[in-house]
Length: 306
Image (cartoon, rainbow, N blue to C red; front, top):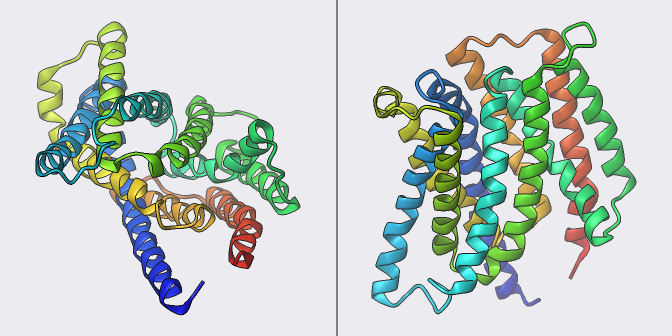
């Protein structure tokens, strides 16, 4: 690689890193909005509304670029539509598990346990794609399990239901990251995001009609939470993520994603007064350390490649 190409790649990577950091700050603070929104509407209804807003935000620039002829041949192709539905279905399962988990667990717990997807990704890669994980990944898994114990067990063997739901959500996000990594380079990002968001919205709305009683008044009263998560957490942050992963190495991105946990824990403490006991602080620290350790070997391998 010549010096000019290396400089361009470095600049693109730095820009992608900044996009991911911005996304993690939005998502971390958005955990509080997700929790607050459920004081007004049910989890399915909340996600249906926020992802409808996110989908519409992605749709507007997609249509603009299509009309200008800048979206590319993959802008509204059948393959993009199928890819968006697949990504949206997986995201729908993950985000609704997280939303229900927030009903019974704290923002700090939810954010740190969700961050375990960083460790789950290489494990799924090993099982599904026969890609071997290093010893450091398994060390990270062991440390993370100890951290979850300190966060989720309040002095006794009693696991909060919300923690289990959020752990399942982490598996869902791990699969979603792998799927996005497969489809994102092949399709127009805005078009893919648009289909993904509307898929989450439609499926969540159907589930909301079946299991909840959607309330327009509830959505109006909870508008600040819906708008924040719809405009920023969905419409902005997910598009930043999908765009950034075109230039940022997955291993570096994974480390940056872990910053969301720190932002969420601090925001939950400042806004919701969810005090972090020394025991839970230890659990948070262990999980964050586990996430970083699990990514170090992959990062070194990436840097060693020409």
